[in-house]
Image 1 (cartoon, rainbow, N blue to C red):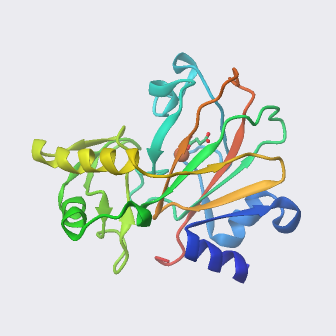
Image 2: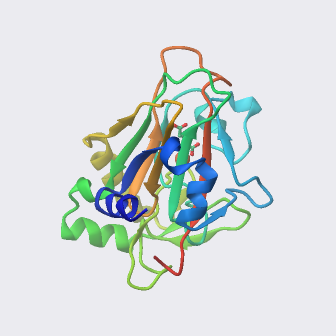
Length: 224
Ligand SMILES: O=C(O)CCC(=O)C(=O)O
Ligand SMILES: [Fe+2]
């Protein structure tokens, strides 16, 4: 675990094997407190390419269907977004052609002025039953810690000039160089969800209902 934590801290994510760490839920429990993504939802989410008409009304599938998903923070609609996201291929998944993509926000090379913009521009965050205000670089949740909170599909600029932050994110993400996670049955990926953004790649085959990822969100322990 010391090794895992230090790589996670250094790189913002880590890929480990189930043989070494057990199931995704066992590993999640070692890292903190697993929390459901939706009230009364299950602790383990099953994520699969789904047609908009069959999707949960608040999921990315409603808008993107079988397409790729844009880069985002998971649970951006939580007051405090989950500390970690754990993903693995489900046992009953029989397709693994579609990658998950990761971008480290530390590699987006924001200038000091750009960071100020991301700290200042305020958004109305929708979802999870109520709306609240937050900037993309959020220092208000945990003292001494800056959280990257970004999911353009659930955030609306509170003033039209705050659109600048979204334009900046678009430009940065377009020129970023993501890591592609290729799924194998033994792999668990742990993502620092306060620092990394992730997205869903494309697939050349119809993997609707067959490429299934298990996901567990982990709440922060005492602000760390
Ligand atoms: O399916 C994937 O690769 C990631 C999906 C995802 O990020 C999500 O559903 O929030
Ligand atoms: Fe996600």
